[in-house]
Image (tube, rainbow, N blue to C red; front, side, top):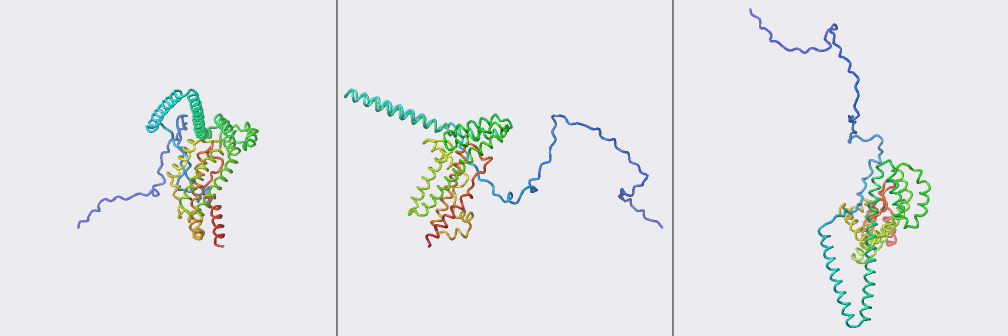
Length: 362
């Protein structure tokens, strides 16, 4: 009788079954080492999906801030070159026409020629003064933009060199506003005690610009309320649209004067174009009934009449224009002070609309 041989089989050996007598060779301890100055140690990065322990519920529920309006970058284009070339051609043509006109008057009578020459000289001097004033207004707008950029660089450095330059330029810009004299004098008393650049810029913003920000908010609120009322009582939609445009342009101009910009005609055209371009890009002009339901609540929005609802919509649009104009006209970006939001104007506009609705129904 033959027995079958069992085939070989692999059996795992547990580490606990190892005999006690087994000895392990200890490893040699690692020698201490040092890192060179050029070497860097990569730090552990925080998990973006893990909530911060220090974050509060209000911070997590807070809505993201709207885009800040920024001036458009100026560059030389073919259209500007063509406009300058044709402008010079028309200027030469007008000069030649005036020369021929004056010569024809001298041919008729000497006194008539001299009178025409004097009138042309007065007109040329007045036109030159207007051109110089417009150029100065454009330069002031560029100075405001360069001051904002310099302030953004100054808060990144601890040394106060750039910060003091920002402060001196800011005081020079606000020197045209008599109501800021007391704030500028108070700020000068302890300006030298600040040696940190970012803190100096923050202090200048708090002491010099925050009072102007309050006035700017009052201007925006007043314009929004006027637009809301006029839109609600205007018999024609065209009248309401015209008043909205008029109030928006006047609001941009008043905000620019408030912050020391003093824009001219060309400067106002540039500011208005920048504001409209920003609102068009960010979609802030698309304010409709859905936005009113979202902001003021569906119950209150349903109780308002159609005309009062249109007034609230146009008032909110005017407030958006004012906030964008603040971003463009303010000499310093919002850092130490809180940037106003559209939600700050909703309560006043809806309260006014609700009061008007009760008066109409009563």
